[in-house]
Image (tube, protein in one colour):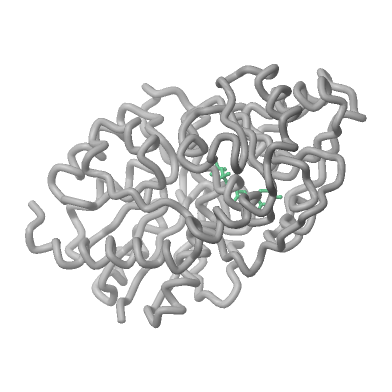
Length: 358
Ligand code: UDP
C-alpha cells in the first residue's frame, strides 16, 4: 500500500473547470489508486470538490495559467499565493508519505524538487509554454530520472527532455459514459473557452454545414467568448454551460460528432476519449494528442490544422463512421485499470529510484 499525496493545480479549485482536463485526470487517478488499496490525499485550492476523496483545502490567490502568457515572461506569483501555500503544506507533511504527485505546471514545484527528501513525481498536463519552465524542468529531469510523466508522445516532444518523459496516456471511468447509437442532429464542442482551443473555427464549420453546434465548457476568457458571439449568429451555436461529468455525457452522447479545434499542441484532449466512450466520433485538427487518439476514418477524422473546410468535409463524411467502433476504442485503450497500471508502475519506479537521484 502506497501513501500518496496529490498536489493539485493552483489555477482553480477542483470542479471549477479552470484547470481543464487535469481535474478529471487527477480525480480518476485518485479513485483508481484508492480502489487498489493505496491511501490518497489531495491538496487543492479552497472550494475544491471531489467525491469520496479526502481533500485538504488550501486558501490563497490563484495562479495565472501559463498558457495565457508569452514564452519569455518572468515567473511570477500573486501575493498570498495558493501555489506557495500548497507547497508549504506539502513540506510540513511530506515525511508521512511515500510519494508526492504534483499536477501543477508551474515553476515553483519543479524548483523545489531537490529540496525535498520524499520523492516527487510531476505529472505534466500541457506542452512546453515557457522558457523558464523548460530550463528548470530540464535540470530536474537530468538530476532525477523519470520524474516527469506526460499524457502523450506529441506532448513530450515539445520539451527539450522529451526522452526522459514517461508517457502515461489518460482514461475515463467507462461506467459513467453511456453509449448512444442514434444521435440527434447537432454537433458538439467541449472545452475551456479560451483562444488556444480555437472554438471560432468549430462555429464557422457548423455555420457552413447548417448543423447547429452545442458548446459545453468553462468560459475562461470572457472577451474571446464575446467576440465569437458578435461574429456568429445565435442560431448556429448554443452555449449549454459547464456541466459535471455525468450531466455532460448525457448531452454529449447525443452529438453526431465532437469537434476539436486546438491552435496549440494539445497535450491530450480528454474530451476526445469522453466522446468516444459515448460512441461519438471525433473530428480534430491533427495537432498533438488527438493525432494519437483518433483512428482516422474509423473513430473520427484528423483534419489539416486550421482548415475550416477540412472540418466541413469531415462532417459530411460522418456516415462512414460506426459509432460502436468509437465506444470499443475507448473500452480497449482508455479504461481506468489500464491507466492505473501505468501510473502505479511509474510511482513505484519513482519511489525506488530516489536512492539513485543526484
Ligand atoms: N468539462 C466538463 N464539463 C463541461 C465541459 C468540459 O467537465 O461542461 C471537462 C472535460 O470533461 C475535460 C476538461 O473539461 O475533462 C477539458 O479537458 P481537455 O483535456 O480536453 O483540455 P484542457 O482544458 O486540459 O486543455
